[in-house]
Image 1 (cartoon, one colour):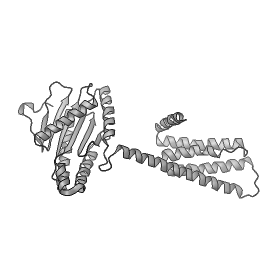
Image 2: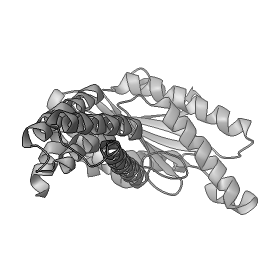
Image 3: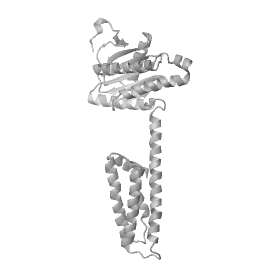
Length: 309
């Protein structure tokens, strides 16, 4: 039973919202015609729940309620066309109101259930404090984006961001101050990415970015802009913290997600060892490409390394 429903859900999920609503609307006259053909001896009221459920589940309460009204009208017209004789002329109207109430309640409950499930899915994928993706979602998206990059032969950039001296913030300002720092960083990271990119909180004070179709020069430009925005936001809020960032551009199709994460993480820790508050860049997949480190907008690489990427 679940497999046909899952197949139907996948098919409907591929349709545009207008297409799904059109299917629901077309279902109303189909069920109404069947209601008329079967006469009053065979009840088809439950069949009306099909279009109502479809509209409420995929298009929301308003659409579900509208289809519920149309289903009630369809039933009423089919009943009149059948010529059923009642003991009182008000009975068909009463029956219509009862069905309308039942259809409306069904539409509201289904739309609320769908909304609740969406909220649960969103909470399972995103961090409640920063609004960024959680580690599990990050790992899944990195695996997918690497596979797509390998298939298309395009570059992919992975950046690891760690907050320097974060413990001192908690010690001085308490957890409320630490949460404010994390929210600020999350806001900057989330607002700096494209729709195809991924910004995630992968640890207590660690963040990560996945930038598909981004080569070395593109990574430098994007991360340099991001670094400046982070510095400005942290200084504006009088946060005495900096960020150490390791940026790895991946060109080798044999690199696994685990290797990519390890490379970016190691690069980030090299920044910390060299004084924190800096950005290190590297390219994997090109022979012996050295990385460079930038701090406060200044290139700290040796002269012979400048201009390599």
